[in-house]
Amino acid sequence: MVNVKINGIDVQVEEGTTILEAAKQNQIKVPTLCYHQDLEPWAACGICVVKTEGSPKMVRACATPVHEGANYLTHDAEIVEVRKSVVEMILSNHPDDCLYCPRNQNCELQRLAQEFGIREQPFEKNLRELPVDDSTPSIILDPEKCVLCGRCAKVCQDMQNVWALEFIGRGDETRIAGAGDIQLNETPCIKCGQCSAHCPVGAIYENSQCGNVWNELRQTDKHVVVQVAPAVRVAIGEAFGNAPGTIMTGQMYAALRKMGFDAIFDTNFAADLTIMEEATEFVSRFTKGETLPLITTCCPSWVDYLEKYYSEMIPHFSTAKSPQMMMASMIKSYYADQKGIKPEDITVVSIMPCTSKKYEITRDDHMFSSGIQDCDYVLTTREFSRMIKQAGIDFNSLPEEEADNPLGMYTGAGTIFGVSGGVMEAALRSAYNMVTGEDLTQVNFQAVRGIEGIKEAEIDIKGTKVRVAVAHQMGNIEEVLKRVKKAQAEGGEIPYHFIEVMACRGGCIAGGGQPYGATDEIRQQRIDGLYADDTKQKIRMSHQNPYIQKIYSDFLDKPGSEKAHKFLHTHYTP
Ligand code: HC0
Ligand code: SF4
Ligand code: SF4
Image 1 (cartoon, rainbow, N blue to C red):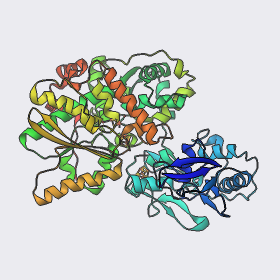
Image 2 (image 1 turned 60 degrees about the vertical axis):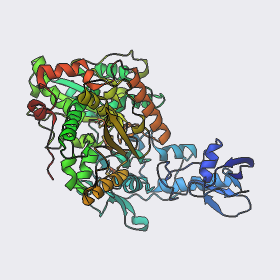
Image 3 (image 1 turned 180 degrees about the vertical axis):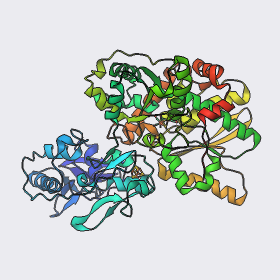
Image 4 (image 1 turned 90 degrees about the horizontal axis):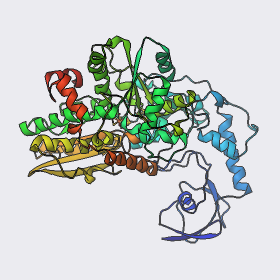
């Protein structure tokens, strides 16, 4: 431990703690802009300067570890003046169109300007006209709004290992752009939206479709159906002042009904369906000794990544589509049949924690199972919260409502899809039954839970050992693939039979379309929320969902059937 003083008060912190952290642990907030808890500090902006007693120089609190015996001063008139000047300098290069900005009222720069009481611009305004990059269906890059904090590039490079964004030019000409100064859709970008989730201002944001969805809802001849993803329910509340992890499923359904959707379905139901298909596929490959490990494919950013970087591994991919795509195809086939509505007259809207799901619905190997485009629009949680506000709905006061049938009922296994490890756990709960004909009495698989980047476990299915790995945050997956490839090259025993991958840290609960501000603490609260939703359900195994049993007996025949393949599976081509 190290003994220091913060503003004259004795504190003790662990060795290596930065001044910023030490202050925070003692309830002092030093303002920051380029700093983000997820990233190694790189001291770009200079807002977090502090003084050390006896030294004439100010240091950057985010990147300076505390020294035994030092006395740090975090706030005085001079420090505040310096910080204010830094903010004013940034503002001199920043457009003032806050009213029209997607981050209005939720912008870290706006907040700093307000906190420092900036009422005029002392520096000459120096704006640059730079083109907007809207080349992907997922995110929009507006470099004019960029404050050069570098968080997006660091996330993309260090956390995701994608390297799609970089700084181009020098000095005054520096700007953020697709790596190599090309459009994002031509870079290796996987559309995860983590750059947008980490951007402090309005320089990267989701490609919004709220307007299109309002238009659909206005058309009386359209039957507009909505599905909501697992992770949305434990994060949407944050947009209305609730704690992260608060489960707001019933309020979400009620809000959607008030907004005018004709049927409200739950992606969690489709997650149960995915488990039926994927666990069947796993058990079949495992018992027949076919290509293993089986690798999950419900995260479109992960699919995109593997196709770009490890296409030789494509045979390991599960052919089961993601729950979003399964739901969309079931709505425009099974549900359309049941209701006697032509699929052409149905609009399917998804509400997802994810920017990549906007891209998934445009993949031509995924999108036409029902004969026409299965899913029409994807809104992120952030867009959904804006629409609730636009509709004047008092979200927190809504009485809880139920989803509609036959595609609304879900099990605990379905809901945990939204956390890293959840797909694996849900699959194991049903695979056990498929192999043994018996149900588990204890369904919790603790070893695949938690925020650790790579999780491994060996599961005993009545004497048969199944080795699994779970990886999340794109930069962590390479290690897992290396282990598999090494064993393949050496002709050794494969290290895993089944691998789950999610591109975002913590899984979809911290997807690129979730409410801003995710840190590991907030991730954990959302994770706890989904596990609480799991334990709350009477049924916690997908194969026991009565509506899943019904959809097979009414329509799909059995898991892995020819019809199931037509509607619920795809093929990946290297
Ligand atoms: Fe996810 Fe999904 S769990 S990817 O993170 O599998 O977006 O929440 O909807 O599709 O169910 C996102 C979340 C989903 C899908 C599900 C899966
Ligand atoms: Fe990088 Fe993901 Fe942003 Fe693409 S969406 S630029 S991959 S962080
Ligand atoms: Fe989207 Fe989830 Fe994948 Fe993130 S982990 S890109 S939120 S599907």
